[in-house]
Each structure stands twice: as structure tokens, then as C-alpha cells.
Image 1 (spheres, rainbow, N blue to C red):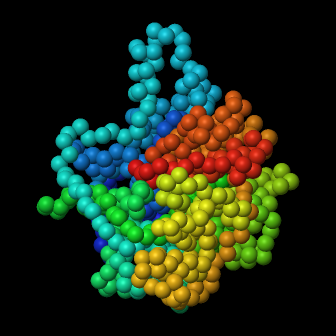
Image 2 (cartoon, rainbow, N blue to C red):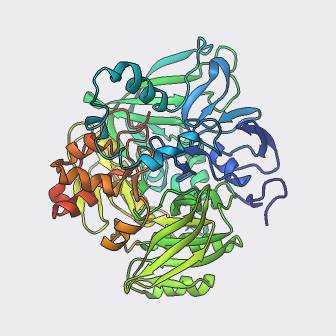
Image 3 (spheres, rainbow, N blue to C red):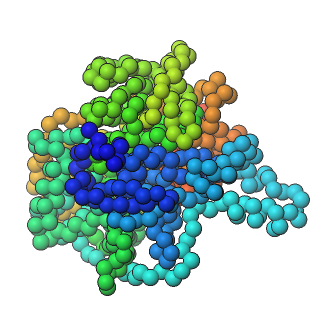
Length: 593
């Protein structure tokens, strides 16, 4: 059931208060929402799919994710002196009266004149700035540079003095926990129970991590309710501090961490004598990284249309925000986790029109297809999509080359999950590639650093709980609060643990589709395509570092969180190498802009 004023809003949702209504505007049009909504969830609830334009080609873009990894939905918030550009709609908390607008378009979002750049794509290839605008030299300052500067950029910065104030502060603890998903909460509880001083940092407004996005039962209750009960236990402990809206963005020497706290960004204006944001310098004797993972898409032609979203994000909007992103959904996956989106969407009344699984047929996939009434396409891929301001159909191709076009308004895509290991690389330690999960994981724990849960490559909830308790207890042992021989606390029982079963499919293209189909995007924000990656390799830029700089892969505001691994996997294929042979780049602070 949906509400009449918000056509895509469900009645339920564990993170919003549907009993209260607030209003906001987007591009001058007024909409309703509820406390707990982000701008992204509210736009989806109101049926708004087109939210922005891409950086280079100005292609229509919609919401891809539900978190800070979002590459598409960059907007301007507020007006006048408080105008803030390039804000991710997926993390912008709504308040009554919020004014938001799209950016990087002219004259309007629906009709962007610079969309003509798409027709000039043969000019704007990888490294085009090294190859074009070279002659005549006298044209550079008077013609070329002004045109480029006019077309470049995203949002507009405020032109008046900032009326708000900001603070710096210092914090100290025995154990710092980064992330409040199942691993982070279990680690915090284990460390705090020994008497260690614990700081738990969560970048979201609500603790719980993926437990708020999934239909998982822990000790016979919804996972998000278990998370709330655990947080209440932690809040009652005098040696625990829980910091929500606080992003640990850097790991420095000497157990020092940079933390960015959003104190009043979720309010129209800060309270009197209250800062808007605070920068923390936290020194911890031990740290547990429980940052979870970031889902990656699959690269296929025209994979950037509004309505094509990450499968995990689709579940987040359904279960946490009570929002469905479409009425006729195609689920495209190479792992079991993606199949859960079909189940969750079907339970809300969404019609599952196809399940496209790049793997051979399995009993698990067949059972979900039967339960949802959806046709199952094993050993298949999406070869193309249709639509302009929103996806309208998917072209499904099996391994024999037979095509089937199915009308849809939502494609939920899962190419697997990348452990969020950014903080573990800030000291220069390179991760290693794990074939079992088709992703990079930290090489080893350091003396003052412990990694648990999905961030360590553990892909099940029960495993994350067990590993979180173990690493939290181990961190307390290192601080002298428990004996090394003492066992970690017991963890709750997951009623039915999920499987992962990934068989990597990085892209869905072959020689035939590469010639005839549209552009296949790897980096959505910087418009880096599979063709750009191939061209860079052909021109001698075969190193991941060269690829990054020559194509700008991973150099946008999202830092390639959904793009980097797909890009280097494609480069490895072009070079005839394995992914470990190709390697990966390292991240530097800050992990988020």
C-alpha cells in the first residue's frame, strides 16, 4: 500500500516517522516527506527519478545508491549565504522547509542544452584534453579556455560570508569503533564490557548499518530492533560514547584519527551558540574497523539511465524508508545477495518482471523466481536498456545470443560487494585480492588496528557478529582490560543466515554489443566508459595509476567508490592479466569530501 500524496511511499519503514509530514522544494517544486527521510528517499517517494546531469556528457542521471558512495545525485542545498553545492542527496537529511536544486544543467534539468556533448563523444575520449584544443595557439585564452570553464564545474558556491560557526575538538579513548553495523555493535559491546573506554563512530544518523536495510532476524526479532536494543545497552554504559553523524575520514600516525561530525546539518539553522559542524582529532590506543562494504554495479551498455540502481540500495529504500523505486522491476545479479531484492520488492507489491542471473541456474534462484512469479534468465546478461529520462525497458541476452526485451521502470543491479577498506590503506598498506568474494581485503591486521565484518571479507551476518565480538575483545586485551586467554562474549543467533555465492561478472559486453550498443559507464560521475579504459590501455597507459589519471577514473567527488574495482578488472582483461597482477590504487584522506 502507498500513500496518496507520495505515490511511491509505503506505509512501513523502520527509519521514518510517517505520522508527521514535512515539506521541501526541489527545483522550485514543493513535495512532502517525513522525518527520517533523506533528500534521495523523499524524491523517490514522490516519483522523481531524474535528479541530475553527468559531468562530461550531461546525460540524465538518477539516484544510484543509498549512501555516501553516490556518484549521480549531487545537488545544491539551501540558499543565499548557506548555499552548499555538490551535496549527495543520499546523505542529506530532510528538514521542514529545505530548499534543494539540481546543478550542472542549463537551462533546466529536463532540457539541458549541454546534452549535445553526448553527440561529441568521439572528441571527448580518454585524455581528450591532451589531444584537442591545440591549434591555433592564439585561440586558447580567448575561445577554448572560456568555453571549457563555462562547461566545467558542478554546483555554485555561496557568494556571501558563511553565517555559521565551526569547532575543533579532541577526544581520547582506549578503543575506537568505526561503524555500527552488526560487526561494529558486537565489537563495541565486547570491548565496553571489559571496562575499556569506547567511542563508537557512525556516519549515519541512525546506528545499525545494513541491519536497517535488510529483512534479517537476530534472536527472533528484526535485525534493526536488535541494533536499537544493543545501542541502548551501550548508551547506558558510562565508559561508552556513541557519535552519530560522525564520519571517520582519516587515519594518521600514532593512533590518531580525523572525524567529521555534522552537528546541525539536519536543521534549517544551528541552535544559538551551536556550531554547524565539528572536526575531531581522536587518539585511540586500539581501533576496530567495521565499515562494511560498498556494492558495485555491473558494466553494460546504457547502464546509467535513471531507474537503474544498486540492488542493495533498492532494499534500503524499501525497508528503511518505506519507498519503492519502481513498479516493474528487473533484478540483475551475479550473486545471491542481489536475489534478495526480488524477494523484498515482491513483498511490497512490486511486479518482478525478470531475474537476470549471470551464473548457471541454481535451486536458490529457481526458488526465488517461483516465489515471485518472475521469469528466470540464467547464464544471461543485460545487453542494453531503453529510455531517456528514465529506464523503460531492458534487453536481456542469454549465452546463446537470443534477445528478449522486457518493459520495466526499475533495474536493480548487484555486481557484488567491495569491503570498505579505505582507512586500512592510509598508512600505505596495499590490500590483497580475494578470489572467494571477488574483492580486495586488508592484507593483515596491524598492532593497533583490527578489521571485522564485511570490511574484512566476512560476508554473512552471523560471521560479522562473531568476528566483531572477537576483534572488540582482542582490542580490549591489547589495552590490558582483559586476559588474552579469556573468551569473547557470546553473540546472538541469526535465525536464517544469508548466502553470497558470487561468480564475478564485471561487464556484460562482447565484441558485437561493443560495436552496436550505447556507452557502458564504469565511472558514472566522470563519464568514464569501458571504451575509455580500453583506449587508455591501447595508448600505453596500462598501469592502474596511469589509467586513473589519464581517464579520470575514480577522481570525482565520490572517489570511485562504485567504479574503481570494475575499472581495474576491465583493465586487467584488456591487458590479459589477472586482477592481482594488475593491482589497485591506494586511498588517501579524506575518505569522503
